[in-house]
Image (cartoon, rainbow, N blue to C red; front, top):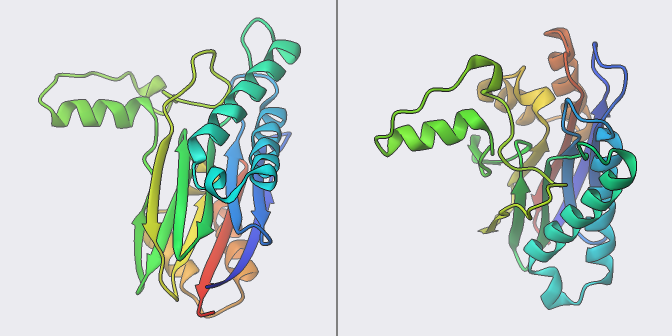
Length: 239
C-alpha cells in the first residue's frame, strides 16, 4: 500500500487568527485535523498541543500500542487540559481531534468533536465519523422516540472535545482500505460552507491533490469564509 497526501489550512475571510491545525506524517502514515473550540481562549494552542501529542505518541509507540488510538487521544485530552490550567484556569481550553493511521491495508480512525473524515470510493462520498454536537445528539434521541428540543443558538455546540476535565468517549474504527480510495480529514470551516455534493465534485477531479484542496478552500472562502478551513487529503495507491 502506497499513500500520497496533501494538506492545507487557511484563516478564512473573517477570523483574526487561525485556530485550526493539521497532521500530515507520511513516514508514519498518520494524518488528522484539530479545530480549537470557539468561544474559549487558546484554541490554536489546544489544537497544536493535541496534534503534537498524537505525533509524539505514534513516534514512541510500539506497533501494538500504535494500533490502539484511544490511549493516544486520552493523553491528548490530559495534556490539553493541563495546558488549559495554565492558560485559562477559569474556563480551560479545548479542541476537536480527528486523526487516523494507515496500517496493514486498514485505516485506524479516532474522533472527538465535529471535525470529520470522509472516504471517497468509486466516486461515492461516505462520512466515516459522527459529529459530537448538540444537534446530532438530539437527532439520535429523537430517532429513539424521545422528544428533544434544541435552541437554534446551541445546535452546533460540541458535546465532546479534547481538554475536558472528564475524559471524553473516543469513537474508534478500523476500516479496510482499497487502492483508489481517497480519505479526507476536514474541519467545519469547510463542511459548514460546502455540501457533500460540492466536496465530491472537487475531490474526484483528475488534478494534483494539493490543487483539489486549494479549490475546496477557495470555494469555502467565496461563500463567506466565516471560519478557518483546514483539510488533509490522502490517496491510497497500489504498492
